Length: 165
Image (cartoon, rainbow, N blue to C red; front, top):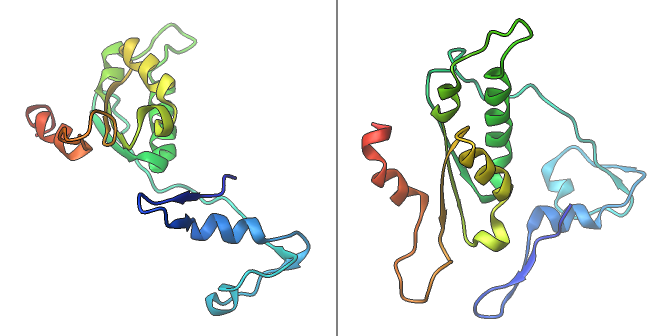
């Protein structure tokens, strides 16, 4: 786990609420069940983490396009969904498979501040796009010279209006 800790442009220190809280926990103690009791970190607290069945659902027909919009750190579920679709499109043991063009119907919009600092799985997305297994559109809002209009995912969607609607 990474602890979110940075200074704003005005040099004000900021910390992530959740990562700071989790970093202060130590093993061996059960967390209380109510939010008001959990508000203050407990020395020796125990944090239980579990898995649940996901709620992302996609059409069975791989020829049905999907559009994923993943903001920075929220990209992991989109990655799992795209990987699942790519695996489904592989040829089967009997030599039959789906149309390879189905992969290109997977469209991912990714937005973050900086390509070099924040582009999670960037080389993976670019390799899939180069192999025509994914249409990848990215917006890096803080890259570029000062004074130049920033690029956001919303602007890319407007550019792609004909494709999307």
